[in-house]
Each structure stands twice: as C-alpha cells, then as structure tokens.
Length: 589
Image (tube, rainbow, N blue to C red):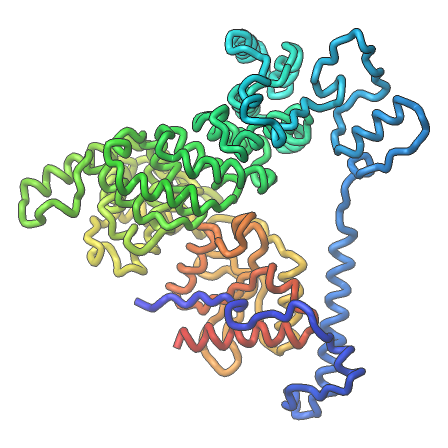
C-alpha cells in the first residue's frame, strides 16, 4: 500500500503579500535571481521575455472571456440622502440606505395621536429594538406578544399559509409587536418549514433572506444569543440556526451564524438528539466550521452513553455527514456511535475470546443497523470513510459494511444499467458513487481481510464502479485554473485540463513532471472547497478526493485560490508551483 502524498503548495512556498514587482526591480537595478538557459540553450533573458509575453497575452484573453464582473443592482446600492425637505424622498432615501427593497414608497408619517405599528411597511421600516443597550431589568419586560396570542397566530399561519411569504404576511397582519427571541425563532422555523414544503426556488429564497421582516427576526435571535440571554432557549437557538441554513444556505451571514454557533456550544448538554442533528446539519449546509460546537458534541458522545442511545438512525446519519463534511475530529463521536450499535455496551470491553459474547454483540449491532434506510446506511458509511483512520476500523463501520453487503445480496436481482445510469435496488448515482468511494478507501487501508470486514457482493462492487465511471459532470473552468494552466505552459510542462483520473475529474494533469516519471494531479481549489469562515478547513469531499488520488499513485498538489491570488508576477507563480511539485514528487519517491 502506498503512502499518502497530498501537498499544499502554499505550505511549501509562502507567497509574498506585498513587495516590489518585476517592473520595480528593473528600475532599481536588482539583478535577476536565476541565470539558467532556456530550453533551446539560448540566453534566458530573451526566452523569458517571449514566454512572459505569451503568458500575459493569454491572461488578457482570459479576462476578456470572463467579461465584466457582476455588480449589485443600482436599487440595492446605498444612496446619499438629499436634503429636499420632502418627507417621501426622505423616507425612500432612508430605506435605500438600509438596503431594504420591500419598503412601500410614498408612505406618510403617522400623527401623534396614532399608534405606530412596528412593521416592515410602517413606522421606521424595521422592528428595531436596541437590545445591546437594554438593561437586564428591562430585558424580560419589553416583549408585548403573549404566549396565548402567539399560539393563536401560529395555529392560523400553519393552517393557511401556502409558502414562506404567506407565513411572513400572516405574522405581520397579526400585529408584530416586539416579539421575544423565542417567538422570533419559532417564526423563523415556520417560515423555513413552509419554504421546504413548497420547494421554494433559490432565487425566491435569496429575496426572502433580504426581506426586512426576516432580517429583524434573525437579528432578534442573534442579539439574544450574543447577550447569552435565557430568553433564547437551546431549542430556539437551534431553530434560528436551522432556519437560517434553510433560507440562506451557503449565502448565510457568517457573523450571524458564528454568534448562534458560539451560543450553541455552551448549550450542547441541554439539547435533544434531534436538536443536535439539526444544529450539525445547519452548520454543515452553510459550510460554517465551528470547532467549539463539534468539540462539545464529540465530548458528549464520548461521555454520555445514556443520551447516545436515544438518537435515531436519521440523526446519526446526519451527524456523521456533518462531522465528515467539516473535518471536525470525530474520535468521541465514533466511540459514541460504537456504543449506540452495541446498545449501550462498549465493544472494546468485550472479551474477543468469548465467542458467545461476540456473537450476541454482533447480532445486536446487526439488528440496530437494519433500522437504517438504505440511503442513510450508505451516507453513514461514506462519512466514516471520509473521517478515515480509526473510523474505518471502528465497530460501527464494520457493522454498517456488513449490512450494506446483506442488502446488496438482497437487491441483487433488481439491477438496471444503460449508457448513462446505473440502478441497484434503491441505490442510484450518488449512493453507488459513495459505495465505490468506500470500497476504494477500504482497499487503500489493506482490504477487507486486513480490516476484518466481510466481502461485498461482486455484483454490487461492479455496479458501483460502473456508476462511478458513467458519472458525467460538466467541467467548470475558473479563471484561476486557466491562469495556472498558462503558467504550466510558461514552465514548459505538458499538461491536460479537466482530465479524468480513476474516475475523478482533475483540474490539471501533468503525465510526467520534468525529470520524474510520477503523474501529478493539480487541484485548483476555490472557496467552495473550504469552510466559508475558515480557509484552513477543507470540506470532506475535497479531502477524500485528494486522499484517494494519492492512494492510486498520483502526486497531488493543491493550489488554494486564496494563496494564488496574492502572487503578483509570473516568476512568483512559477516558484510557487515548482516548490509544490518538487515537494510532492520528493515525498512520493
């Protein structure tokens, strides 16, 4: 078995964030740092000038093809309030400056005798509450919507609202008067539920996230979480984070999610199993890494076996995916998962020489595994494969692997395959791909025999490999990838863009790096490959791809865009790639 050699070029060559460019070095008379000859033996200066001219012309062509970068629509941009004296213009300018596009134009100011309703279309345009400056004594006395009134409103909206916009209108029509953080979180949960039930499109969800009513509800919860107030219960904290993930997804405000995550991390012990699963799903869906939350979950799974036994298979599958997706430890979580399958016992405490005890434990675990749906079963196995290491050798993975094999034999007569699709029982494309990745991970760890795993049915292994080879994802070529390709051409390295390597689409493939016989896979990793709030955290799919390519004999060089965009000159980019290549190839040898 070959060792893993995934090299981040940025760890070898640290890009210069600022400093003199090539042109400035010419004016100061600084001599060049290298004096080698070009590929034809001519003077390097002339060869370098020609190559640089070619690279610059290609970069110019890429910029033209990329076109003008999108900008915010004019009506979203901040406007400076003009002193016209007109109340209508004054109100519209104030609304535009706040960035809210749902304020009705031409509204009039209420007279002193009228009570101003704090809604999104009257009064100040916001249910603004200065919670930061409220005293502790005033905190619990400012909310005027009673629980009885809220229960009536909630019942009516749940019964009559067809979508998220209807739910918001129902809440507003009921007269939203400074709702408490707990009620605000429930409102957000209902709005998000309506969005899922009505299968609201992404464009509509984007508009919903900018709605000032949603902004106020989220702001109320975030302000309470920041204060650590008891008016936002553990359940409400999770509801706010879950709703934010449903409504905004990866576009969720990182600062808001960070506040909710920090507050959640100290409430983990008070959360139910479903609330923990919802919180983990929310963070993973938003690509928001929270070391505090996952560390607290890790500890809870490792120490609270009574609570672990209350988790449902769906909750465990969700948590496994979240731990794998955000690369968050998972040692304690895997231990707790073992305890769940052993129905409260610790598998490592069982005497391996006691055959009856081992058989009883295996039978108990098999019964628990049968409660998983076929899709949740595969997703859990994939998550443990992404975590790798001890997770692949865990009692949980062994149990799940055996159940996949049992179901594979059961579904063996229900197969279908054509030019584009493969079906094996209830498993299709995505799930068969995950089974294939699990098989590759097991083979890289020494195979079924080395890990003590039963062999999967050959028909299932064949179907998963067939589905893996037939997957067709349209290539997405970024400007950064093209820039790296132009530097490779500048260096004289033969390469192929969007190449297929063992079923994986690789950004740039170098069959043989100069002076070696080692194939090199270059991955230009953009922001979508990392957590949004922490560029040091690679997502699970990216980590698994790099690891498996390395296991298959490729030297993998990761080029994070966050590093590449700071390299100013062609010479810096050449040196960056050269250092990454040399380190990857040296480690591979």
